[in-house]
Image (cartoon, rainbow over all chains, first blue to last red; front, side, top):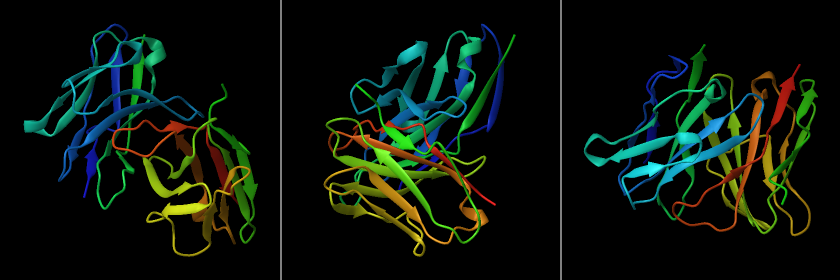
Length: 115
Length: 115
């Protein structure tokens, strides 16, 4: 079975500071990992995904994430936060189990950017 | 190229009424997924459908909930005899194929409020 744990339901950073959102996964088979962003009253938008190619994945809006198998982690980072980054971020895992590839989402991290 | 469409965006029902949520996938997508997001929680998988077939309904409550994706028209998530605990945001996603690592494209969601 797969699971995802996002540490920190709320994270606050100052504008221009480093953004680090943590995600740890559990999977008995090689996983596919995703980060999605949700702005208020909107659907989810894909930021980036890991599909067993490069372990450092670059996404949209300056975000990137590194897959670390030894730590079972897929943390999301951005060097310099912008006010527009304020949103909720979800990590998700997908792995083939019983012929299905459904997503398992974490509980989300709400990012607040302080001026 | 329109994205995933969901309607209505907001739905208010009284306890005991029926709720019908509609989802039109992106053009060319034949795989549809429904998720439920309770307040302060992540998205929980409910059901995965292809045209005219329910493939995986492991996340659907056993009673009152049903889903369909007919040959013509949108996918429908139907909740009979709604209760206050059904109040949530319901998201639909679609994908062009069903394989490991595929991206799911999300709609803006339907926010159901049960009075």
